[in-house]
Length: 453
Image (cartoon, rainbow, N blue to C red; front, side, top):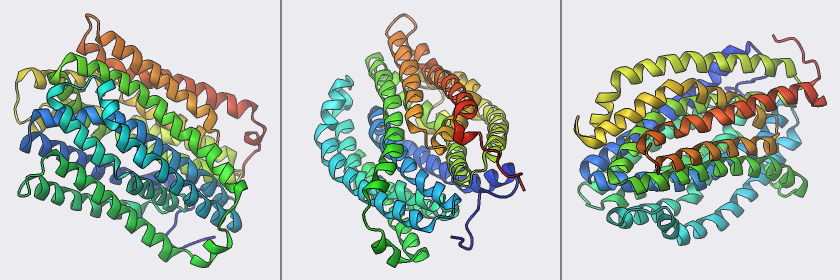
């Protein structure tokens, strides 16, 4: 099924096609992180350091639950992308609609569960008493937006599976502008404090989800939905790929929770410093994850089209993109870190500033490790081998857990600064080995693809 304006990733030069497809994804990530950065700035400046620490405490819970949603939704779209590469219209629409049923079930189960248990999880994280109330309010409101988050992630991945990475980007920009405006209004004149920041995020996610869904309904024939309304076979395949990918994110997030527990025991200054430093870090590393998302779709389409040689060429192209980006990002961080930290914290001195500076200096040296991990992990996922990918999450769990435990020794905060890098390194080694094994032993990956055009 060929639609005007959609990118066919099974033809053309791999490097060019990946870059063209990834640019809107990277742009969307940068805008998302720009919003997160502005949101952090607004919270830190307008509410205070304690509020910034409260948002930082929520992050590992967000990573655990929203990461599961993001990973699952990417996985739900893999069979769809494979069917698009294989030009199988019946499977395309069946996978599309049956994944919606799975998403609705996720909304029904996860939303009330997280609203009820978010405060208990904050207690388990040893959240300091002076920020517990703010962290609880922020978490409860944020988790009430789970339906909007699921709807956004799945609808965006549907469009990307069809080769449309532009419209999710356009709609994300619109929602982020709305988010910033609502932040300023709800935190400022309406004086809603940290609750206003959470409400603004939920509303903006709902807007972006509705825009994505509206475009899908406009682009594709509604009649097809009724013809392929329910299929246990398709639902099984969707879940077998999507749920393990979600679990991979969540297993990795458990390591982040262990690390956050250690940070919380180091005090509010360490919480605020790591929160500020990591928000800035994400501004530079999440574009690498967007390139990884592009690789998952690229791999899935070419696997469906049985163009295995093309997948191998795509891996080389993806690694080249990540290497160049990592070098550029490192120098930008080195030159701008002091200004970025002071922008978030509102000052250029003090313990919090010094700790945030240390965090950024150390982590920026390992950007290429993170970028390479995103390539190999997403290739495994794009091949539909989600069960293998789960164990890369254990690699991150082990790395962050070790960092968290070492932080409670004499190493203290310095161990926190190395935790993510250790997690990335362990997972990268695993994903690299699994990728080599798959291409050497899996019969479906030994098919010689057509020569790349």
